[in-house]
Length: 504
Image 1 (cartoon, rainbow, N blue to C red):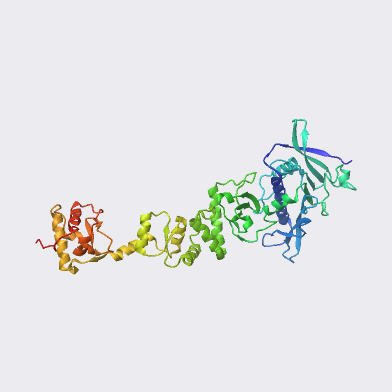
Image 2 (image 1 turned 30 degrees about the vertical axis):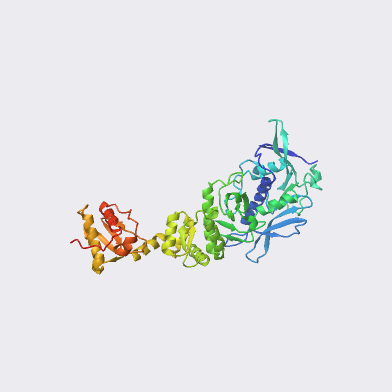
């Protein structure tokens, strides 16, 4: 019987107790994925750009899911196989093969990692293999590996020194003659034979007791194996628009969490985001919102046909996807696209108005501007203003009032109106001798407007000098602070029995 050695690791059976089958598979697939990029870097292939790893599905999914990872040789476009992933539905087994990759026992040390600092490399803590294997073994999913000259089987073994079950790697010789599995004293059930012929330098990892139903859930959580069919890639990350990916958060192609219940509309795969050992997103939610807002803007800029979907998100004012939209679209064509959508939906004459305005202000807007009013959230209004196609309601009202309040020179007033104005001025001077006729400006205004204070003077609507109209009016001018002016309008609004007579 071949020599069998036990390497106890300092991980008790209770370590990372919240981890289960998914977390274990995630870590092993992640390590397999990172190994592919390490292999691509080591290839003696002359290329002016980094080699891109491709994944090709090559099997009947009813029997097994098989993915080959490869790079294309720039010289002749031939495939250079880097690794294989196989899920065997009949035997409930996941197999991960890294070509020309040999692992040393030092990787079993906690915190040890030989991964380079590459953008595509997912892992960072040097714990994934160990903790992932622990969670799987604890859950009844045996994990075995063939690498270098060894066969490794992970198991929970009682350690007499500590009186605790700890994760232990049972090591046997990979290169014994004959049937190496039998020679190691382990059956095929305990140490399954790799379904692919291996070279001595290859590494093969197997996990058994993974059901087809579980794999159906796990597979879409690796975008490099089952990519989005509707997506836009930006330097910040990839916007995922497939219905089944709505609200799903990924980092470097690996699923992190489901944020549909937290108002994330689209799926997103961040190119870079700090995650902890459990792959929980470390940043505050607002940092995630900023990244998503930036990805959406860049995606709409690349793919303008997304503007309709983006417009709806903005108008609804609910989703995290657009929470910081205004900060990221300055200098882009997105405000113009939003403005065009607004006009298509509501017409050129429609006016966007803040949905926070009072009912009184809203009635004034509708009365004075006589056009369709569309209530919008503040973010949407800010974006429309950036387009340069929409004047604010305040500016429109000010312009309208300015046009409507055209000043009427005293010399152009009729003798009757001059008489009313002089008479009223004389009455005011009885209580305020500082008041002068020059303190009054007469202006054309809408019929419903009354006087408006303007510093030490007052703008008097032209209609208030029409005796027939004045006699019917009952509204005073509460805006006026000058008591003399109050008396004036109290008097001239009285129903006179006869025309005013000059008093000087």
